[in-house]
Length: 70
Image (cartoon, rainbow, N blue to C red; front, top):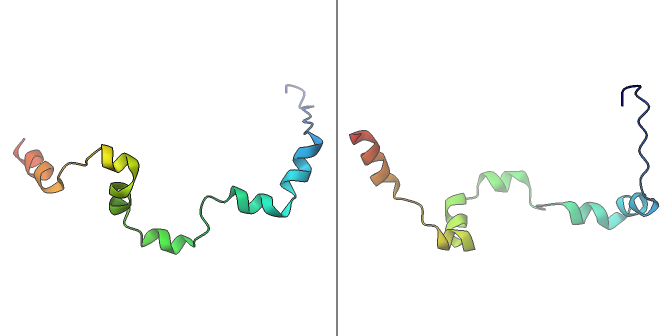
């Protein structure tokens, strides 16, 4: 790295796998357009998830009232 002669050799199978037609679709986390993400209610999604059923978020009105009193 000091003399800037760093060389990287990738495995042969990797270049074939990455250039394949199905690779891009398998790496996508979300196929819906970004605009739908902005319209999504994350609070309701969290409450429906497994973690949301285990951890309850505090009531916003109560926490704001307590914060104002302190």
